[in-house]
Length: 461
Image (cartoon, rainbow, N blue to C red):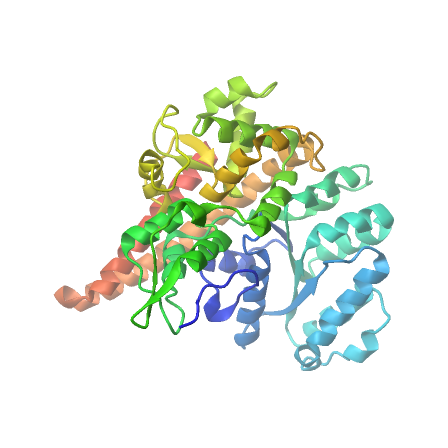
C-alpha cells in the first residue's frame, strides 16, 4: 500500500480538502478584484486550481476560469507571453466560446484579456482570472509601472473577476506605488487571508476520507496531528507522511516522536521565506512570543517598543489569520516544553483549539514545527533587521482587510445557518429513526457556527 499523503504539489478534485465556504465566497462576492494572501505552502495554488476545476466541471457556471502563473516573469513582454501561453494551454475551453486563440499570439496582456472578455460576454459568460505567484508584479512595478497601472485598471473594471494569490511580500507594491496619482495598486483589491483548514476538513485529511484507500486513525492521534500542525495543510500532510505505516493491509499512523517534529531543509526554507515576509514590528512580536512560549497582549506591549495595545492587537490578529501565531488556553506562566513526549501542559492548552473549540486568551507560535525552528535559529533571526515589508504597508492593509473579513464571516455564517436549517428539517422528517450520521453532521455545523460567531465578535471588538 503506497503512502497516500501528498507533499509538495498542488491538489484539486477529490485530493483537495476543505475551503468550501471560502470558495463559495470567492465565486459569489461582489468585488471584481480579490487578493488572497497566505504563507508558503498554505494551499494558495491548490485553491486556485480547485476553483478552476469546479468551474470547468459545472456546466451552468457563470464564470470561465483562466489560470495565469506569473512565476519567473519580470518584464512586460514576459507577462504578455505567459498570458498567451496560459490561454493556449486551455485553447479548447475558449474556442468553444468563439475565441480565436491563435490570433492572440504576440499581443499584449490587455488586448488578450479584452478579446477573452468580448468572446465570453457574447455567450453570457464572464472571465475569472486566477493569478498565481503575484509577487512578480513587484518586478513590473520597478521596470514598467505604467504597464502595471494599465493592468490594474483592467482587473478592477468590472468586465471580469480577478483572484490573485501571493505571500505578504506583495505588500511592497503599496510602497512602490504610493506616489501614483490614483491610489496604490493593492488598494483596489479586497483582501482575504488564507488561514488553516477547518477542523472537520483537517480531520478528514488526516484520515484521507476522500481517498480510495482511507487511513485508520484513532481520535487521539488525529488531535495530536492537528495540535502540532495547527491545521496547516502542508504540515498536516508532512507529519502524516512521516507517520504513515501499513498494518495487515490497512494504512495507519504510528505514534509521534521527537524527530517527526523537526523542520528539514525544505521546511526550514519555507519558514525562512515566511519570516522575511514579516514587517519589523511583526518580527519583534514573533520573536518575543517564541522566546516567552506563551504570552498575553498586555505583556507583549511592555516588550515591544513604541506600540500601543490597540496596535499590538491589530498585528497579532493579522498574524493569527496567517498562521504565524495561535490563541491558546492557559496562563503566561504555563510554558510549552521542547520534547514531543513531555509537553503535556502545552498539549492540554492546545487540544481543544486544534479541534476548533473553546475560549482563548494568550498567544503562542503558530505551530510546533515553526516554534522549534524559531528557537533553533533565534539568534540569527533576531539579527535580521531589514525587511522588504514595511509597518506602514501592513497596517494599511490590515485596516483594509478588516471590512472584507467581516463580510466574509457574515457570508459564512449565513451559509452555515442555511445548511443547518436544511439538515434540521431532514432530521425532523425522520422522526425517531434519524440516522446517527445526520445528527453528527448537525453537531459539526453547530460547532462551525459557534466558531464563526466567536471570530466575528472578536473582530468586531
